[in-house]
Amino acid sequence: MKKKWWHEKVAYQIYPKSFMDSNNDGIGDLRGIIGKLDYLQELGVEIVWLSPIYCSPLADQGYDISDYYNIDPRFGTMEDMDELIAEGKKRGIGIVMDLVVNHCSDEHEWFKKACEDPDGQYGKYFYIEDMKDGKVPCNWRSYFGGSVWEPLPGHPDKCYLHLFHKKQPDLNWENPQLRDEIYTMINWWLEKGLAGFRIDAIINIKKALPWRDYETDRDDGMIKPQRMLEDAVGIGEFLGEMRDRCFQVYDAFTAGEVFNEKEEDFPDFIGDNGYFSTMYDFRANNCGKSDKGWYDRTPVTPDQYRDSCFFSQKRAGDIGFYSNIIENHDEPRGVSHYIPEGDQNDVSKKMLGTLMFMLKGLPFIYQGQEIGMENTTFTSIDQIDDISTLDEYQVALNAGLTPEEALKTVAAESRDNARTPFQWNDGVNAGFTEGTPWLQVNPNYTRINLESQRNDPDSVYQYYRKLIALRKDPEYKETVVYGELIPVWEDQSNLMAFYRKSEEKTLLVIANFRREPRTIKLDTPYKKIVLNNCPKLTGTDSEITLEGYQVVILEV
Ligand code: TEU
Ligand code: CA
Image (cartoon, rainbow, N blue to C red; front, top):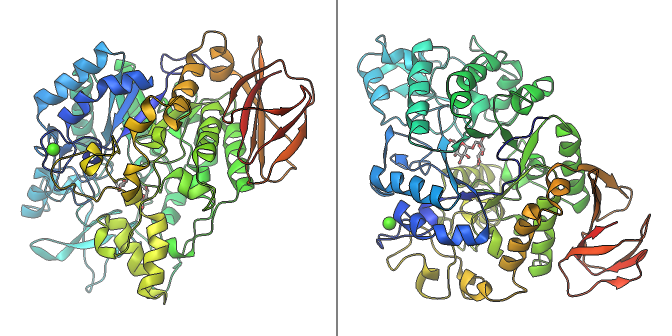
């Protein structure tokens, strides 16, 4: 594996709508982010990905772009963006934008023109088909529910494809002219000095053609798009082209949001000269998911968590770097999701953080994770804004759950859990805005907020700073960043332990992933405690007793 400029860094995801509101309209914005750059520098992150801020009707919170070349006025101006890039650079922070090119918005000029003239140039930018006897071309279900086909406005005899929401028409990557448009746009942004892109839902750009029905997986007669992806071949031609014509030219950092890639293609994605620099490891997040919907999801056990992480680690091996996460804007908060109720506290939060940071790969913090933000409470479906959650609520009702049960299941999984405003302090609206926040602040902000943690050496925040500092520490850097990962004691339930081994050093990470204490006999005595999420470590240098959710990094 070739060493890359970004390997040693720590990355951070900002969800702009919920980070910091500078003008009190209730919506986070670019000036809000600029005002918090010093904070991000203090934390120690050097790559910052912004979820989309382009012009958008915000049907899917900006993942429906109506103009790739402009900033949505709710988020700010192009001058603000240029300033953010420049101010970031001064602080050693590279700004990464979201690249959403599987689809655009139905309010994009291209789509409007396609509706005007489906047989013209812009009609070919999309997938537009004739209805045959009122029937759509195939039985695929959109990721957000319902058919992937929607009647084309103004042309009731035609329909267009949308794998996501009907306000997100899929772009036709088979059309070289469309691909040219996209590459020009990417390079226009890179030319501005962006560090790179996070690349949205990218596996979906290659469809299995011609359209065909598959065997249904629910009572609705439809089938999830993932089935079609199994049959789609040739995505590499598009991704290789995009790399060569855009990313490679600028040595840009790219993080792919890749699901459902083919096993044998993995090295092509993130190996040396891969399509992307890195891709997210979603294996643990996907544990317990059900084809039936969120309501049928089962909780992730500590052993499943560990096995998922180790599986991915083995897969990435010496090929490339995964980006490791416990949560993002599409997931519930990691601590609420992976730690049983009653055990969600500073100790278990620090444990999850330590495991994430000590896996091989690029640690990617999601905003608020560093202060231990948790899932919020939803007492009514009206408090939920997210289209995916609203769809899953309907799916749960259709399956026969009562409204109360349906709300309970989707509240635990809702993407809005991660999208509540950042909790800066215990003042009005957690210091996020003086206006009315677009999504309610988590009521626990008086207890969990940055201000109360900033000067507390034992806080989750200060612990994350230590994790980040360890990754940069000249003494440990080589081992933490590049050391081989060797799992140990995998036969012990609720224990996640592994060595990180370089030529100079060996570190041993041991996490007691349960409430009860446990005693562990080490293979060799340890020399030093490098990090500990509890005040002390009981035992001797070769036999230690860990408290519930205690994690230690030992030098052996
Ligand atoms: O997500 C793509 C995706 O496939 C999953 O995240 C999933 O469909 C979704 O979370 C269902 O709840 C990306 C973005 O991260 C997400 O926010 C967007 O909604 C989606 O693409 C469409 O652009
Ligand atoms: Ca604002």
